[in-house]
Image 1 (cartoon, helix red, strand yellow):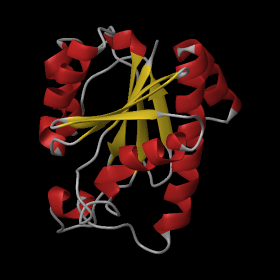
Image 2: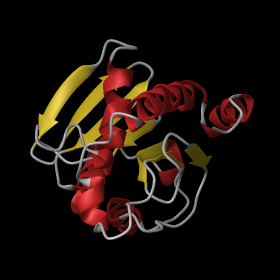
Image 3: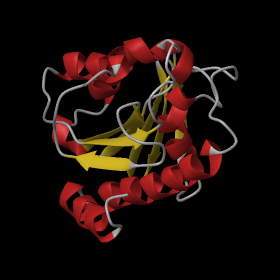
Length: 185
């Protein structure tokens, strides 16, 4: 069994923001199977034959708390998890799939890695681009994308959902193979 964990912030105010790219991918995955939903104070868990999805209901910087609680219910190891999140260090719409690594500038991923006690966790980053000069990073990621960025981010979320689905069904190597076939965009 494997799980996809999409990072974001709960609430309608945050739904259209760059920081919720992980939630956008989960929304696409929900249409691919018959998921049974369980609601917890720390997150929403969806289960189907093909795997598990976690939508943390903690705020981004505390995403690790939800992951820790999730792993109490489903004792998976870090390589069985795919963490999906936004990345300001990648151009808008670019994807990066890796089997391990650090958190970079992402506080949500930092929280997840601390909770797991390992950097050996697969991750799929969705590029949202860097903030314009003079704009605070938090203000940028907590704002909606521009009209020009929306089609790029929508297409990236579609491709990310494809990769996440392959990960759920067939594992990381199959997802990496598909990522290579997509041209690593």
